[in-house]
Image 1 (tube, one colour):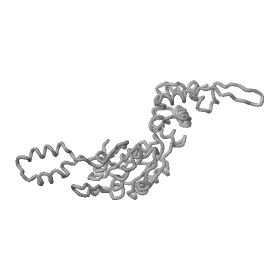
Image 2: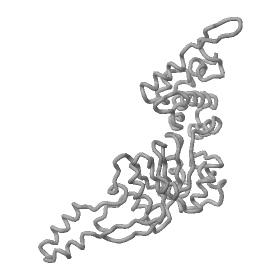
Image 3: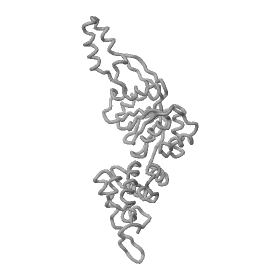
Image 4: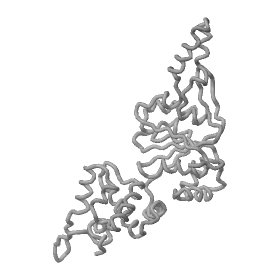
Length: 319
C-alpha cells in the first residue's frame, strides 16, 4: 500500500468519509470516538466480540491518515523481548571476536556492546523511533497476561521507552494507538485509564448490509440481505464462534458464485468454521417446527418465509 502524506481530520464527518474511502463503514458514534482519539492524541481501546471489525478499523485508519501501520499481535506468553526490544547476541558476539585481538580493555569492549547498533527493534520501540507518524495496533491485548499491560503503560502514557543500558527514547512523532480486546478477560484499570474506550458490537442489519455491499459490490442486494439475515440468526445460536463480518462478506461472494442460491448447506462453509457449530446450525435451520392453534396442531417443514430458516431451506428458489 502506497502511503500519502500524513493527514488529520477536521471533524467526525471528515473521518467517517475518509474511512469510507477505505471501504470501512463507521457509524456516527464510532467516528466521533476515533476522531477524539486522534485529536487528543489518546490511545483508543476497542472492546467487543471477535469479528466485528476492530482490527480492520485500525488498518483503515492508517490508510485514511496516510500512516504506516505497525502491528503488535498479542498472545499468551508474549514477553518484553517481543514487545519492546532485545539485544542481538549473535551480532554482539561477532563484534567481540572482531575486536578481541585489537583491544585489551574488557570494560571498553563491553561498553560498546550496548548501543543502538545491537538493538533488535520490536513493534513498540519501532513506533517510538519512527520518523514518520504511524498507527500502532496492539491487537487482542486481552490474550496476554496482566503483567504485560505494565510494559505498555510507559508507551501509552508518556510516549517513551526506557532502555537501562542506553537511556530513554521519546517518540519522535505521536503515534495513533489502537488497542483491541475480544473481552476474554477484564483489562486492568490502569490500562483503561490511559485510553478512550469504545465497545464495538455487531452492526445493525441495515449497517451490515451496507458494509457487505461495499466490500462485495458485485453481489445483488437481495442476496446480500439473505446472507446477512442468515448470519444474524447463526449469531443467536450457542456456537463456539459466531460469523464475523468478514465471513459474511465471504458468504455473500460464495452465494453469488453458487448462482445466488443461499439455500445450499455448502454456504455454511463460509460462515461456520467448527464441525460442532455446523451441526448446531444444520439442526436449527432444518428442524421441523410444531405449531399449535385453537383448531389443530400441524407440523410445518420450514418456518414462515420472512425467517432465516426459510431463507436457508428454499428461498434460493423463491418459493
